[in-house]
Amino acid sequence: QKSPSMRVFNQLESEVRSYCRSFTTVFEKAQNARLWDSGGREYIDFFAGAGAVNYGHNNLMFKQRLIDYLHDDGITHSLDMATTAKETFLTRFKEHILEPRKLDYKVMFPGPTGTNAVESAMKLARKVTGRVQIICFTNAFHGMSLGSLAATGNQFKRSGAGVPLPYTTFMPYDGYFGDKVDTAAYLEKLLDDPGSGVELPAAVLLETLQGEGGLNSASEEWLRQIARICRERKILLIVDDVQMGCGRTGTFFSFEQAGIVPDIVCLSKSIGGFGLPMALTLIKPVHDIWSPGEHNGTFRGNNLGFVAATAALDYWVGGQFEPELASKADKIQATLERIQANYPEHHIEIRGKGLIQGLAFRDAEQASRLCAAAFNRGLIMETSGPRDEVAKLMPPLTIEPELLDEGLAHLEEAMKELSL
Ligand code: PMP
Image 1 (tube, helix red, strand yellow):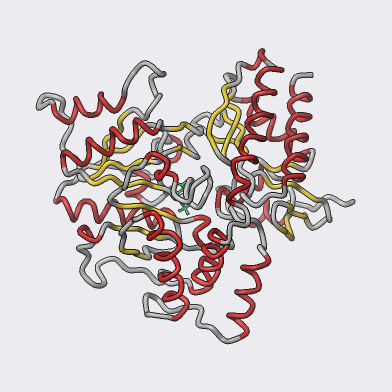
Image 2: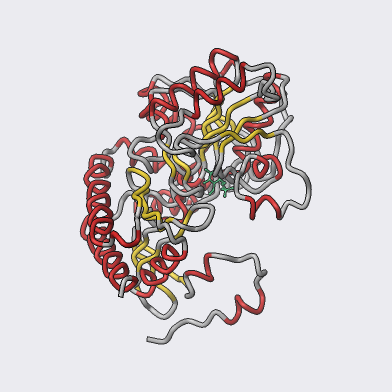
């Protein structure tokens, strides 16, 4: 087999490109959790488009719906005009997702990406409360435009802004100081202390599990405390479920496990079902005080996204894969525990839950080395965390159990190589 050349990319594409530096091949095709490069080599996907293809690549049901829609000359671009594809999506979203969970949200289409959802949520919270500050957390990742970047903890990404990133206040996330410090109580004290210098914010913005920030999980109790602190002070709670939503942690919304109901929810990545750009901002009706046209964008209404997203919602309630999520998560955890026990010299910590788990290394470089050794065996996985110290496993939720086993076996071999 001939290895594809990266020459064109090296010559023509901006230096900002990153994944192609870790996964040094030219990809061509994909089906569920398998990818093939242009040389015909097969790879197992433990990356899932950074969470954008939770239901697998080229999901056959979604593909057929898209083909049928295009065959019938379905409209693809419509700004925020009313279309039948959007109508069907909204109706199904209400029936399949909101009603069974007794959730009442208006749906906003803020633009194509997760960043757009976060940006609109921050803007709306400021408009609703008339306050300015947004409280966000250490190691948070919320996007790359100036507002969402201001809420992102990663210093490397922030410094690229070239301008100050104001109006956000960083607080320690759950577990930031270890198990013994209650950072929810810390936040509450700072909010109530007139001497703390911490302004009453418009919103608290959080991920229930920090996907980019190193797979740090907030406990359910911590999330409930934060929700209470917000409720008691009329601070809006924004949950950024861009990466953890759509089943990644085992339930459709990650926050439902804690029994909290955010004021605003940001969804993107897998909501479009097929890896098509799509984002939602869910707003409690009382907060939906936007004036018509106040927040717009050319690509708010991706109708192919609506068609694939509707198929994805039907797929959820069809029960094809949801019952298998727990057993797949257990399998991943068992493998990670075995690796942890077999290689005590690496001082590995297991992070995450559901189908997003990882190995945090004390020596950050080992995580990148592990991912590189995995890639050489045909397994695609990325690193996460402020120092890239976590090797992150994030397969499509729909991965076949045998392929999951195969991928986990590659991971164990890669780990063995690392320790030689
Ligand atoms: N929020 C979270 C939690 C994310 O993980 C991401 C993307 N990694 C974003 C927001 C930004 O989404 P996008 O890249 O689609 O703009």
